[in-house]
Amino acid sequence: MLTFKNITKSINNRVLFDNISYTVNWGERVALVGANGAGKSTLFKIIQGVEDPDQGQVNIDEYAIVGFLDQEAGNPGETSILDIACGIDEEMTKALYDIKNNDETSELYGSAFDIFNEKNGFQLQAKAKKILAGLGFKQTDFEQPASEYSGGWIMRAHLAQLLVLEPDLLILDEPTNHLDLMAIIWLQRYLAHQFPGGLFVISHDRDFMDEAVDSVIEIDDAKLNQFPGNYSFYLKERELRYEQSLERHRKKQKEIEHIQEFIDRFRSTTSKASQVQSRIKQVEKMKAEMEKPRNPSRLFKFSFPDPQRSHQKVIGIEKGSKSYGEKVIYNNLDVLVERGEKIVLVGPNGAGKSTLIKILAGEEKLDSGELITNYATEMGYYSQHRSESLDPHNSVLEEVMKNNGELREDEARSILGSFLFRRTDVHKKTAVLSGGEKSRLNLVKFLVNPPNLLLMDEPTTHLDLMSIEALTQALQKYTGTLVFISHDIHFIKNLAERTWHIADGAITQYAGGYDYYIEKSGLLADDKFSVTS
Image 1 (cartoon, rainbow, N blue to C red):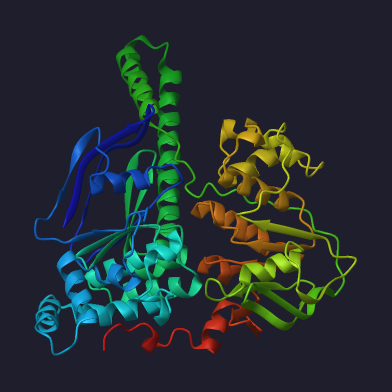
Image 2: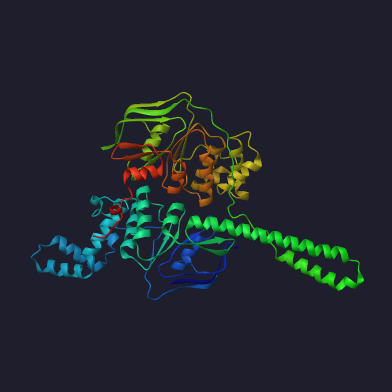
């Protein structure tokens, strides 16, 4: 269905792909993975025709319908959310307008009704409404102009349009970026169990790939490596291949040593001169061709100091209320966080998860009620939208080193490397860092010298899969108290021990992590994922 052949691409003298080829067959579900900067999005742009390769070609079956989800939503004008999801063309738009604005007995209404019906408009609307609901839209949103919504919500409407279209191949670049946890769960279940077409996807969501794909291709060192199976299988198979290549490397080394013994033994023997010279050339060729395999995980495991022990009652809110204008977020709220708890906040976008974190952190004030913080509580607040005070004159390395006087430079470099600060990046001044780089640096500062209460809002944003794994392992060892928001299911599964579901100003507390919450909430009931009548 889709074939790219002998693709080579360089950017700024850096080779992204060197003669790579692959075919996505009908019905196949493929994830494209690789480190940040490996060229995943560039390859998608080449497939889409937005960028040209230096050499090679892309072929799409002439009978195949391919759907791309653009990263930019564009200006929707006065188009409604529902119309975007239905993919309604100009003729259908006019027909729909005439249906809404004319009497049912009029000739114009009848003509418009026939046009809209012939184009399957009513069936499209019914399907689109169910998909929009799955992606988090309320029924009251459907007829609203899309221009009234944020870019993230408009992207959801365009994603709904692709799902309504049901192309033969759906190509998605980070489709979960603009979704909350509930919408992510809905999307991965829908793609896995109801979407009939093929899938080619880039994602940093491990759980999403485990459920939605059956093949993984990896860009590594400008080459393309293929793995049958989902992402978890890919990790195991990649490690197995590494061990096998390491064993072949050891055997080759022993073979070279054996040949070298012959060379050393008979170097001065005239009758063996030709054999010695032949073996010298053989060894030189073997050494030139031999390269020690790189460990594919490249995951630096580290331990950071235990924070000072807090009291049992760490932080809480009594009879708290918070509103923004006429919108009531919380009313008469009572919550308590106790020592050692790892709590995840879940719920739809706009329910108040970030607001609660900000209230606990002292970033937002309650309208009424009381925030109670124990005197032994040392608080740290992390948000991707909040830039902690960084000394603009310090380098990245200096900023981390000053945060923990006992940290060795090689340890600091390794930790920074795990969070995408490579080689010379550690010498950048913090003043020139991007927003994402500042977020990652603040994250590292927490890890090397953590307080005993961590409040974290979407800490995995701006991280690749290996960095997310490094963060997960670090926080698993953390002995303090953690309250966090995340849309990464794998991250939640491996950290959360309690779950607070926030919706309509109320908090429902579940005495368990993600799996316990899913079981007790009935979130994965089959009827929640069906878009058929």
